Length: 513
Image (cartoon, rainbow, N blue to C red):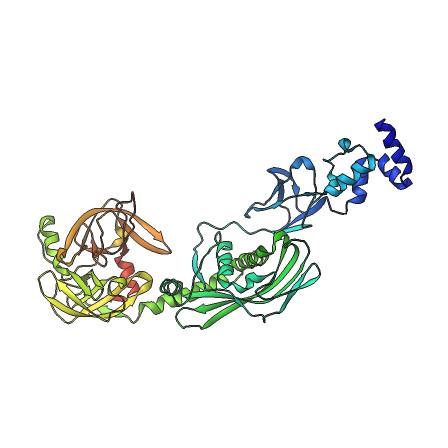
């Protein structure tokens, strides 16, 4: 009976639909379905292997045709030797209206082929993916603070179209992210994470921000000068090209707001079904990766960094090598050397330091003296003198002081480059309380470490607040480093660090006759 009713329906249908049904449900679906079941996946450079859900399917440019057996979520990855792999997700959509139309057409809904590829469409259209080179692990990384993103477009400026309608800049815009420079700055830093640029999103005018900028010697503030999008989609889902014009403006950390150079850039990001809130961030991320490949950028940053380092050293200081402190053996070595180590008292607390010349020059940490120009220096012998802060080097946390005196005991300069792992290291300083002046601790040299581009001596000697600026002394009684920091925390012990003495003298521009 049911079959007879279905046959009667077919007799009343137009002839072209009867023909369509003769070819099966998939044929009817393909007539009704205006979606695209396939897409071209390309890469720059071409020749990348396309993996769909972990299975290699071909090389770019690759024509992918959706098959429901691939699943409702496609994890597509492009791999090319020497380049970082790139991934994107795609969720094919099933047109339920076509299922319903086919079911009603035949009158037998349970035979509808819901797994026919013709019932699905791949959102976002063709994809072209930019591949970026694998970072060289031995390449020097340059610190690069990002101090916000400037948008140099007028309020209500036209930024392109979405579904044929103009996109205007403003708080209610589809691209309202352009009003949040901090958020875009974070997108840039994230995009550069796996490159040779150690990018950090920061703010000028803050203590930590200014310290970061001074350490890098340069900072970048990208300036967006134009956006032109041609997007389709619905429910704020966007597909299509987004062109962006950016000037990457690099400023000097030494001369406030002094523009060193700029790199103009035009990029095109192709959105593929992402939410509108992600489109501008993805476009900025693409531009950031292009910046890392700019041909002259590394040379320019290196030149400005070296120039900044030279300026931070200050004027050269020539000293007369100190007379050695007399001691007969290891037993009385340290009791003799403590006379050249001092406690430095400031308005904010105290630290340690040590004499490097008989006429009163001494070294400590920059963070010990801070912004003070004059500090009190207490000697082991019991007297106190005023010390002038001659110069500081914030990059290496060093300061050079001078007291007006003669014939003071001073430490001899050792050879830190000749130190061997496991050698004994002594630290002398004033830990925790000024009453504990010239305390001695002993350990070994645990390693030589690179931290944020600087070399440090690692030792397991006890370093506590107040020890900062005191000397690391080797087995022969010569100074080989300046105690500068300790990494502490639950389960951490013996992670003390010091600036090698040769580096400390170089960065303070001190030499001996």
